[in-house]
Length: 328
Image (cartoon, rainbow, N blue to C red):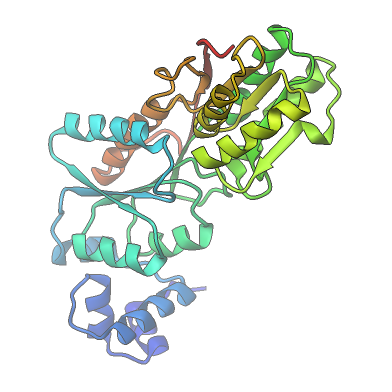
């Protein structure tokens, strides 16, 4: 099957070729209705703009876009710090950030800013990424566990290993039945991978898993951690893995209010080594998922893609390690 042309897109959308060209090049000379028709036609026909021709119209902006899936994800701060380090080190580029609200706003932002490359942090759908890849060739994804798309670079943590290490540390500390507190594992692949590491460790150490050992909350935030903390005493839990530090911090706050001693009465391990986890009282033992390293690798690779420097592979995994502090 032959590749779709700009003429095919114009015919499918029932607009002029010049209108299609304006949309591709981010020139605001057509209505919003026309722009959406053209974008839909490009998507349906799997049309990819001729980037060489497009570069004659658009000059490089030397700007890279960083898009977050969730505004309040506390692990993002260190990832962005890593991205910033590599981009500033290069000296030729700068970067802009935005929080995802909907596809149209992201697409409009990309076109208006004429971004040279994109870094996405979080679990964005393949439909969304496939669509944007037709507009912008150079894309790097961090913490995205969907089926990989050809041409997109993926950088993830060894989250399953992290779940294993956290559980193992509790078992070696004498905890016979480690529990786990998580966002609903069927809703978030990142949490699910950490949960699978937990299950694997229980199996290796001959610990029988019971369904009540998984405590699920609607989302990862401080309030949900506080609410979950109130139930721990009634369950007689002595050791807890939290799939996010923000959950663990909420639990610690409730335990403090109930005069429960950590680590004497209960031992807790978090995940992500977010800013502030070392300053709690007691300081939080956590799994460091290499957030800064992920950001640095993303910055390094997006620059190589933009400058057309060959990269050796399109999938990278950053090691997880345990940071032992006072809650263990």
